Length: 233
Image 1 (cartoon, rainbow, N blue to C red):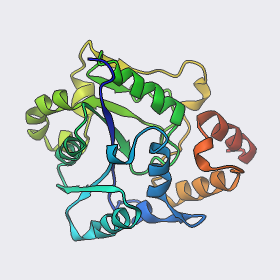
Image 2: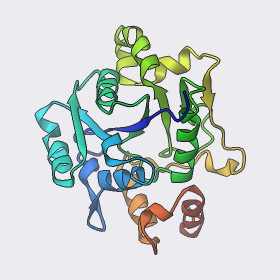
Image 3: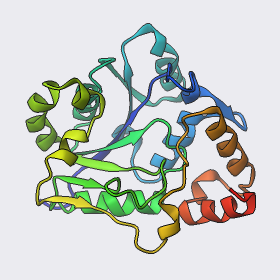
């Protein structure tokens, strides 16, 4: 099968531990989640993007945001994130689901396109750029076969740690048809923190975006690294 269908599941909670409400905090008037979705829209159609949050009352603001912005929303288990990820992906009716973190504001669009093409070839069950981290934190992309993940779910559901860390089981039980994408060209990128976890991260994200002269989707890993050098990070 060629050109397997790929969709994106954005895992997001409103009450994050270190920076509560970060998903809907705004930079230049735009909520963080919208930055992420606008980047995903460069690769996926709207009906292949879903935000997966919990069915707790505390996550109502995320559901309301999705409704206001006409973004698909799936609400599932608070604690079993793996099950929520799978059920959200199943609703997209695709062959592969890309796991995107709700704090990854600067997803690199060329990298995402490259990894989606690998998944579309249908040669791999799992495509990831996370192993032995050679990309910045905050640019993590994992794409997994829906059928394969369904087969793994019983083992994942047996262990609360696997339930919480959606793909941990896969790294601990590697298979030959898993593909790990490595950044060999820009080795200095590997230690950079671009994920949005803390107040300090938010300040840095705000500062990076303040350098943008064009739409934020025009800025990827290489352009952001040049901005960080100006900021003397």
